[in-house]
Image (tube, rainbow, N blue to C red; front, side, top):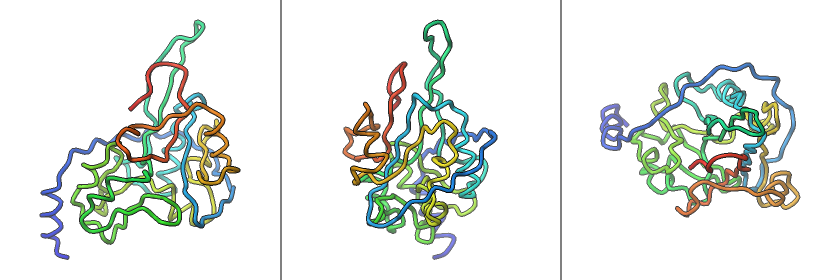
Length: 228
């Protein structure tokens, strides 16, 4: 494939991409917990009542997955400051790939670079097939994809599929979280930690009216509106 072809396709598929700056916070030592990858449907749960906005997850993701400065696979969004019993409280929400069961990014990809892994349910990008056309960026209703500044291909969270998961470890963000605000596991296993957590709490998923069936769940915070 010539560079001119790639430039042409990238140009006609242009979409506005908003990226969020990475704030460098000190991160703890990553956990060595192990998991098994084989014929499961992975999902994640973010507990907004536990998240303190430290962004250790963002730093860990950058370090483990070699994400360049200026772009990020995961961000923690400030959802407002509130008064609770005379004390000021802040609330935060996670912004990252939803790993949809019905991912629109996969449907629009002209080369098959965007795909959903049949064994894990993880939505991923094959950089060798991606031409940087940005169709997937435009199609994603969660606005969590970006063009990698080095490879010039689409990139996003893949649950550390080719780094930590490949070594039998939890995703970097989950392992490093100091307040245990993140839970990761097999949604189809009723005995898994994430399945039990979802079943026992009030949770929400973003933009489910679109039929994307996202696998990123949230335990809502105490204040304000649920972020969309």
